[in-house]
Length: 208
Image 1 (cartoon, rainbow, N blue to C red):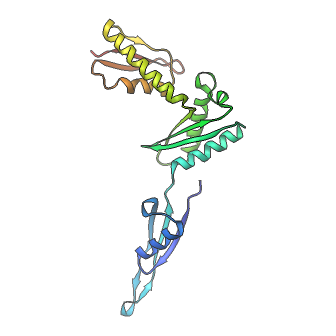
Image 2: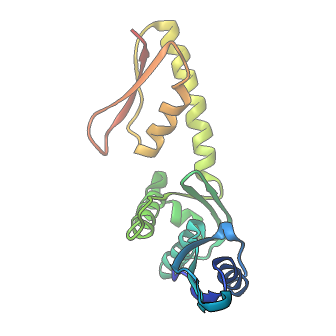
Image 3: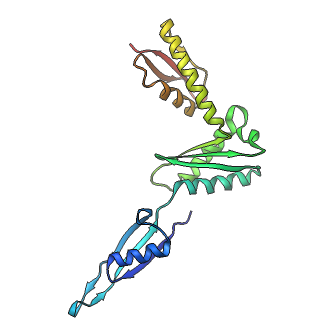
């Protein structure tokens, strides 16, 4: 995504910045400011050289992710509609609806995971601060997360009662993270992953 940048002159740095903000139709929190040259005064206090500033609009990760996703889905020739785009603490979460969502989800979410992976690679290719992308289809992931959290809690109760560890079925790294997070606040339970991808599993056990 091309970053909007303007250079402006003014009798003072503040005046030059204001001119740039007016042209970009932005607030000061939405931009990055570089002072190229401070103003200097000549005889009688007259401005000899004006201030020069370079002002760039801050990149909005959610807009970049959305545009990249649209490019991907258009190439896949899917019937889709992006219904929600959220930005929170380094993560962009996007929800999609449409006629071809079964194709996009794929077997056990494999196609969805693959598209999410590719989307993340493209978006983070030239980015200094990595953005985590979560791609959801008709809240498939959200429902899956809620189901996994409930399962993790049930299994942790079983571990407490039987005092025997439980090994869950193989899951993706994202699903394993959900289980770890769901149980990390339980003082009696510990979780860890074992095995190699794609058969890596979460083990739920009592803390020693």
